[in-house]
Image 1 (cartoon, rainbow, N blue to C red):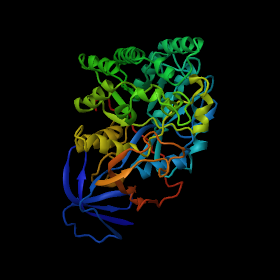
Image 2 (image 1 turned 30 degrees about the vertical axis):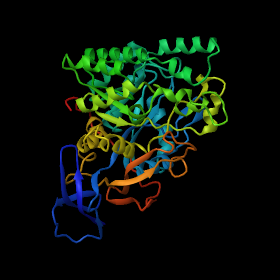
Image 3 (image 1 turned 90 degrees about the vertical axis):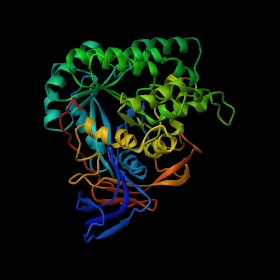
Image 4 (image 1 turned 135 degrees about the vertical axis):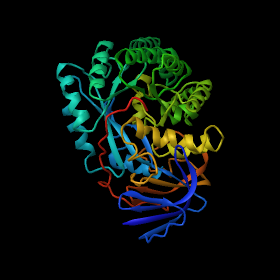
Length: 467
């Protein structure tokens, strides 16, 4: 199967030009003007943007959490991602304490194998680092192609590891060419504040936010950066939300340390005032449960800090932390904020929101857009140049995008398996029109043309800390 994309404006992290793209099989074969080739299919991209398929390195599909499962499974989640221009996701395997990493991998494979529409990979979340776990790290990196390991400095008594385990894991991961990504918030302090608010009868969603003040994230981010510096292990802070945490990374750069930073689309666009939003029924503040996630939404000043961080090169990735729950699931915490399943749906919205609110409003350039949504995730997580760019030999993961089309986000029209939207009624400029995944048309005219099982597990290379 061959496809010729004609006359599109090609945008990569470092280029912007009009040309044709000829795809043969699963990869880009030739790029140039007025290509003299015969193709099985021709797509006219005149007046459209053509950029690499988005990579979302932070999603939670079919994930067990707080006594339930996230509502998007691997089929619905990866399909929704494709509708939004994201062709590749990286999910998280969660080790159960007392069990092996291998057992966790097999459990997650049981849910994902043969069920994905788009391409995918895994991070391995280590919740119990011990002598047996230590022996598994090398094989995960060298044989399984899983080169990134998630740690939690929060969720005390469930997912959190202590600093001793963190240092040991960092030393082992560094030795074999991997990377540590971290949920950086102070779990002990948060645990204390949750208990304090509950003891005082303060149980609305607002107190989820007030239990995780900015200092909990700033302190943990600085501590993580210090441990990464001491061990020399590449470090990546997931879902950064605030000025204090970014300043910790800024300080680390003064000793010539590179700490990779990811923020998420919601932290750029939404703020903590939503936690006081009432339901239409009049129930005080509980609509805020839709945005209960950890870390929580912050203040408007933090949004501007994060946009600036993107332009300064301190924030390299914009992801989603997509972890949706149906409204009935959210209502598990109707009488106690600590029982609300944490998570927010955005896997389908990220690329269009980032374009409309970022590029269209002059906050970032088109090249920066591709850099943080497509290219940097591929580079950091060992997939570049196979993914994350449009170049000869790269996978033909391509988005054709109308920069002028206006549309409105709504739960009535999205494809995520969740019955509300975090962005209901938002009017956007810029829409995904056609998506190719490894040379196959995945999305066109508002329809998905691929079936579950087309999505491929992508083995990733060792990490290059010099990116």
